[in-house]
Image 1: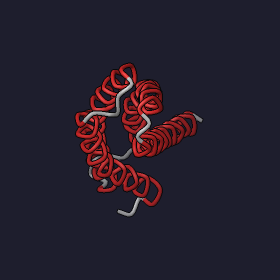
Image 2: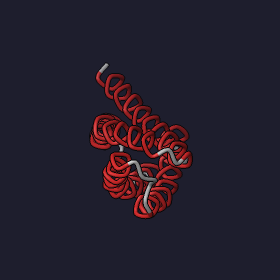
Image 3: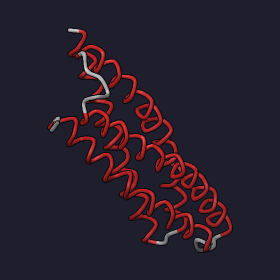
Image 4: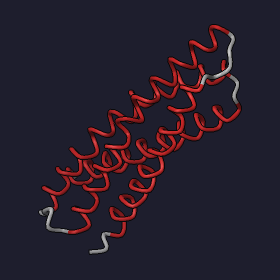
Length: 154
C-alpha cells in the first residue's frame, strides 16, 4: 500500500508540474503576442503565482517521491532510465529557475507599462525571448522524462 500511495503522489505531482508548465507557458506566450499591455500585466501576475504554488512545490516533491520509489523498488541509479530521468529533470529545473526570474521581471515591466498606459517596452521582449528559448529545452526534457518513467526502456 505504501508503494501505491507514493507512486500516486509521484504521478499526480508530475501531472501538476507538466500541466502547470504547459498551461502557463501557453497563456503567457499567447497573451504576449497579442501585445495588450494590460492583459499581459494581468496574466504575468497569475503565471508567477501559479509557478510559485504549483511548479515550485512539485519541483521539490518529484525528486523526493522519486527517490523514495527507488528505495521501495530496490532500484539504484545504475538503472540507466533512472539516471537519464534524473539528468533530464535536472536540466529542466536548471531551465526553469531562470524562467521564474524572467517571469517576475516580465510581470514587473508589464505592470509598469500598463500603469503608464504604454506599450510593452523592449526590455519585456528581451525577457520574453530568453523565456521562450529556455522553455523549449525544459519542455522536451520533461517529455523525455515522462517517456522514461512509463517505458523504462533499459
